[in-house]
Length: 418
Ligand code: EPU
Image (cartoon, rainbow, N blue to C red; front, top):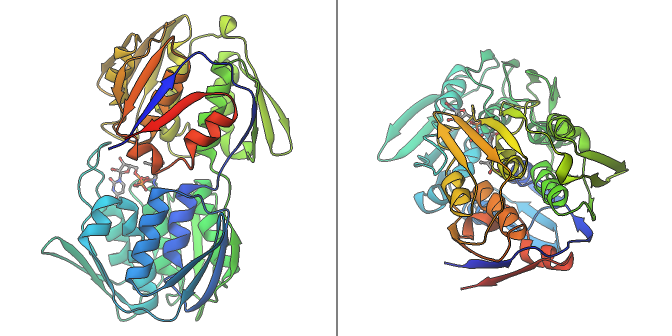
């Protein structure tokens, strides 16, 4: 188990590039199971989660070659199995994204049931109900979920919640079905849109992407293509918070601010301004003039749950009381006790964190309990008065590419140790 050792309080300046979006890459990689041929994917982030998805694709028989730092050639010459094993699904829930493409392409799939998760129970009932509505028969046995369908038939579906991977799985299942599928109350996240754009490039007929009503007209055949993944909005948001708390001398490069509208507006409310120049963003921030605020996490275009933890560090630095209400996941405040160990004064009642600032963050030994909790503790460590030892950094490496090297390049004192 690795750890980061962070010496806080350094001045940070320079260019911090943003990687490709993890949560767009995972469904797009899974989607290469849907049609035979050769794919080229660019702007793929070098992450543990991406490695797991690649292993899963190799398990199905695909040949994957890294042809440049962030580019892959993926050859699908036919699938050797239709079963996703426990070893790979249990370490990454997003492995369940193979269900939709397998069902679409081969009419059959057996995927190990995703287990528990650090941020909540995370059921997959909406995925399964949708597959059934498209005509699949679902069975759960021996820890596996089996789905079978001779022919998937388009249907108008209402999702009980706009689940991100659920919407993606149902789009992938529906693209080769007979007739028209309409997904009402669909997820509007940019990552869902990116998957849809990828599929449209393959010959799918999907409209309404980015809205809550996605219409999929089934086609006979799909063709592999070359595709560039969108930049990671959550990574960009993480870096923007870091910059706001360290004087704003960082130029964050490769940002699509259109994907961060709610985040930008809330930060502006706090008193942070943004200088946007193409895909480069710099914040203009004076910590002494920040005002407290209340934030609620919501499905896109609402405030992203994946930036909740990092934003709590920002709120903790502001004089006065702020509130953060988490409505997406039931157990996503595990970073709060860690931040309190570093000097914050945050109380949790139900799904609301009341943050009483300002905080004089002090280095301490803390633990990353999930990916975004880990990112928030890196930020807290970098603005702390002395040394922070951050354990369980495996979580962070699932979602932030070469974080240590990139932070070192802008002057941060952070190193990895075993
Ligand atoms: N839900 C159900 N039933 C379902 C599906 C979801 O009740 O069938 C509930 C979940 O339990 C949760 C809520 O709906 O309370 C939202 O879950 P959603 O399905 O939207 O999340 P996800 O698709 O499992 C993706 C991202 C997460 C991100 C969420 C929310 C990927 C691979 N993962 O998860 O990313 O937090 O959407 O935006 O796209 C991360 O990157 O750190 C991360 C956790």
